[in-house]
Each structure stands twice: as C-alpha cells, then as structure tokens.
Image (cartoon, rainbow, N blue to C red):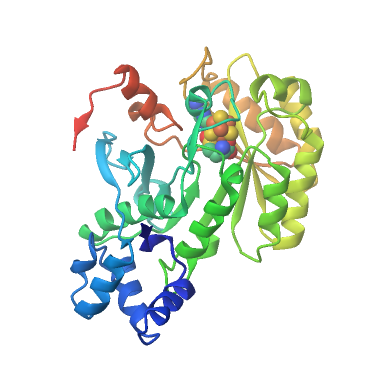
Length: 360
Ligand code: SAH
Ligand code: SF4
C-alpha cells in the first residue's frame, strides 16, 4: 500500500506515466488532494475510471487522519487534536489562531505537527520525552496532520498560514521523512505553503541542522537551548552530549550564514532551575552580538516537578537579555488549560487525568 500523500508531484507524474497515462493526469490527482481533500480515489470523479481502478489495484490509497479527541480552548483560539493515522498510531496536532485585534499583525492559523510518537531525547520537563521513543512517523502521516486541519479551516473559509514542527518528537531524528513532508507541503503543485512560513524546532542535532542548511530551502530554524552551560543543559536534556552549548550556537550561526534565515533559541523557563538573574546574565554573555533571537517559554508543568516562574522573574529574565542587546520575546501562551504542550494530551488521556475531553 502506498499513500498518495507520500508522493512528490514529480513522483506522481512518473507514476501515472509508468501506468501508461499522459503526464497531465498527475495534476488531476494533485489538485483535488491538496484543495478538496478526498478520502478515497473514487472521490476524484474527474479521473478516468480506468486510472482510478489501476491505482487501487496497484495498492495506492488516500490516507486520512481520524480524530479521536478534540479539545478547544475557552477563547476558541487553540484546537488540539489526538489523531489516529493510517497505521493506528495516535498523534497530537494543534491549531493555534492569532487574532489580529488582540495582538496586531495579520490573522494567522498555525499548525503544530508531530514527527514521532514519543521521543528518545528524554528532556526531563517534556511529557513526550518522558514517554520514551515509540516510532517515527512517515512523511504522509505528517502531511495528513496538516491536511486534516486544512479541511477544518476550509469549512470556515480560512486556511493554513504557518506550520511549526513543534509537536511530539525530534524532527531531526526522523530527518528523511520530515524533509519529504516539507517538500510536499511547500511544493507549488503540492500543498503550496511558503517555505518562510515553516519553522522546524530541534533539540540541536548537529547532522540534521547541517543537512537542513544544505537543502536550499528558506525554512526557519528554532533550537531548544534551555541552559547557558553544559552542566545545567545536561540535567535538562540528558542526551545533550556530545553537542556542547557552544557548538549548538555555532551551528545556529552557520545555518544563518548559509540560509539567511535567523535562528531562534528556545528557552523553557523553569522556576528555581534556569530562571535566575545570574543564569540570564550568563545566557546574555553567550548570545550577545551574534544576532540570534531568544524565545522564552514559561514551562507548562507536564512532566517532573517543574513550575513556571513568577511573572516578575520572567520579566526580569527578559530585561537582562534585552538590556544586553539580545533580541528576546516571551512566547504568547496558547492553550495552556487544554494541555497544549508537547505530548501532554496523549499522556493525559493515557492516565485519564486531564480536563474534560469532548469526544469528537
Ligand atoms: N523536539 C523538538 C521539537 C518538539 S518540542 C525540540 O525539542 O525542539 C517543541 C518545543 O516545546 C521545545 O522548545 C520544547 O522545549 C518545548 N516544550 C516541551 N515540553 C514543554 C513544556 N512542558 N512546557 C513548555 N514547553 C515545552
Ligand atoms: Fe523530545 Fe523535544 Fe520533548 Fe526534548 S523537548 S523530549 S527533544 S520532543
């Protein structure tokens, strides 16, 4: 069985030509796949019946994600889904909408996708990390998460504007499938999302960052740093070695040089762990002058015994960085009350300890 959402447009063309049909038939599959979201080959009536039958006989299918649970934040801006993918794995995907009347700018509908079930990196504050690694998602399963939300948005007359790889798993540890999904989602004959509207978040896997820099794509990169020195980082990210903090910052710099895309360093702020003024000063010293951007994420208490710092401490941390000339923002919290942090919904459901879930 091959899911048609796995194929790049060029591969789709090759497929129909190998089956003895003219090249243009590929577009008659691609257009509906990315704009009408059929569930079945028979939902594409403009395709000749013989081609549909040949594709079905050849084991080609159209995969779709099935919603197991949907929870929506009180303000309606965040929708978190637990999706069943074709191989019966459940995975989290989140839609975050930003209302310009509240924060300015343009309306945005950002999808956050998962790339793995679980994660081998074991970050101590992360629900996914504490789950351990289960499996890598295939490219088509990453694409399906976006398609599922695209269909929901289309029904409201809206569309996907941004995509972040910040759900469950470490994207660089599933590089080939992750990058295939990016190429399909950004292809102008695929889903057609602008490369600049995509951000990949990584714990800092060197080989992955280096490969991504060579792809000739305008993708944004976020590196999860969480600490200004190796001793503290190792406590929070047990698999952190052999990449030192200095090496990670250098990797970010090289990515910027190669792509022209500025790198964001993510920093999950945990009370009494990595939020002191001394640590802020150390972080400022480390990043000063290299043009990087820091995104402070007050922790969402999900795993371990970590607490969010007080607002006063968060602002003080931000002030120290800003005054040292380090560009810095505090992430706007989206969907905290619906467990929007990475891996949390699946964990909550496993223990049935979460808020009230509405079955979809
Ligand atoms: N594995 C990648 C991408 C997925 S995690 C990475 O680590 O970057 C995406 C982001 O969510 C990371 O910055 C991670 O630090 C953050 N995160 C994980 N658990 C969190 C929690 N409990 N509260 C706030 N942010 C969290
Ligand atoms: Fe994996 Fe990212 Fe969670 Fe760390 S924060 S365990 S790298 S998903």
